Length: 519
Image 1: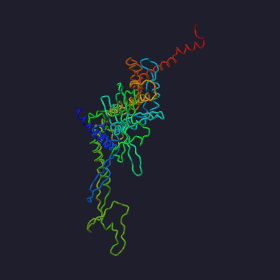
Image 2: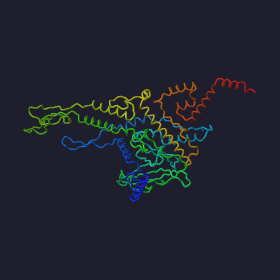
Image 3: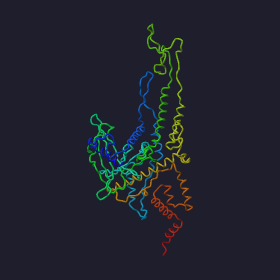
Image 4: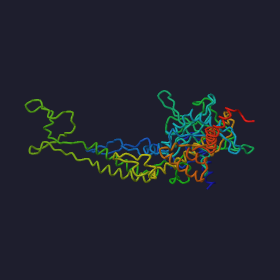
């Protein structure tokens, strides 16, 4: 199998060179070999997320082929937005502990926390992540890469949604090598030129066996947005951008990849994630088809009345007298039809719209969608009923709450990885000189106040502490979601405050103030 793959790669490299390094698709690059079905799935997800559907073709009463827009509910977007809002909000707190657990003395983690807070605030990380979680859940992935703006001496973030990130190498721990794609445009006269920058992140070994992190930049130019194009020099768009950059001292990739919780059952060998609706494609299509038919029936179901052509006559009569206008010319309800003298001159042929039948059909499909996406019954409704409140979600041990928690863990690990990457990058560029924290030294509090009753948690853990079942430090960690070092620091401050207001200490201080220290 490995030999066959090597032969394939050899042919790819040869074709790549002979074509003058022109890429039609991302898979034409010799370093990239992704299952085309995965790329097609991501592009399909993006089109549906955008609400981009092909028009509906139909034949009218005259036998002519016509087109109209396909009307959808865009539940891929709606479901992602609902879940994203439950997972993360801008009240989330990210803390790097500032004490050495082993030596129990201050160390550089405090500086690390200051740096992380500055970088995240500078990049409006919380706001951006809250927004990017929407396409992440809809499309199946998100990559964020920190980089250094040398002139400003600031660490910036580059964001890439699922169709702009491609894995090169992966293992059970995640993706180690990858490619980030970004597209910019230039107007040359009346022609729009598309430039695609491919940024390769790879691990390589030096002569002495040291692991080196190598970033390689390649720029491609095309006049067709669907084609990557021919390779051109970087300075056509990016002045001063080095073709290759080598960084030492990293323990993990600079890019951090977030994929929605759950196994990729559609392509089990792919390291890429699935969108939350990827196993519900047929249900989404059924809902959209039903809604489109409902919308068209409403449009076609306006009142229609056939009247005798004599009543809508617009020509003078035989005597030359001008016709008498019977109906308001702005009304489109009446249609002319030749009728005999003994027939009714007005026939109402309007039919009732099957509103309730369509609502029932859509709601039934929505129940199926909720089941497939592991969301609680009542999450979606087409009959105007309000959704459950967050309190109801928790009190009922709601399925949506459990599904939300699965995604929260993935986001938490993603944030911790990004914190480590920021600090390692800052250290490599001499913007930081302290120790790099591990995941255990990083706390992420998702502000679960709407999902977890903090007073109830405090009461529960307080009782456990009273009976000696749990230490105070652990209670602080679990209730307030802070690292162990921070909890220990809080406990120390609490003891100091209690010592200040202790009656015995107050009496001792008063005595000393009145009589002085005893010999």
